[in-house]
Image (cartoon, rainbow, N blue to C red; front, top):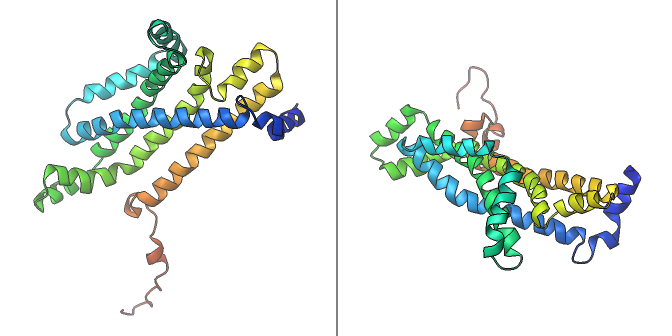
Length: 242
């Protein structure tokens, strides 16, 4: 079975054509980026505002409660409602994207809000004491401090969307989920297992850039890492002076 899956993955025939692996892979990536972009446009400003002002915390609670809604049920319900109202392929893509956006908003919103709220009150008081306005405090103090949790929230959302977009293939969405749905329908377990493997590899591949992003964007003072410039500085001799 493993040999068959590997042969399926490296077969040039499987990678070509409209329904080939390359097209399905690009579809899956495109849907994921579209969903994360839309969810980020909603969740990040809202999380910054809630964390900075302390108002509207109920929105975080409501967003987290949305996670309890069965994704597949909501997907079918929204598709049935929009199917007669939308033309062509959009009748399947729009409800799928909408459900995936709803799924991606809670982790991004919670990460952004928690990151801003985790800012040390003493640091905020010091910034205000220096004459910073509320917007300057948010931009120069709270957002840098919030970056680790903000990026963590986006990473969680990406992994969740990559996995759930596979299920959305049930209602006609393209992507790698087609291999699982179509493979099970005709008992083609090689393509089913190959599709599942590709989804897992894609999730790991999309997670890696965010890990690097967190490493280079987050201040070393927040991560406990020692900046390279300091590591390369020769230590002072014991009891000596510079």
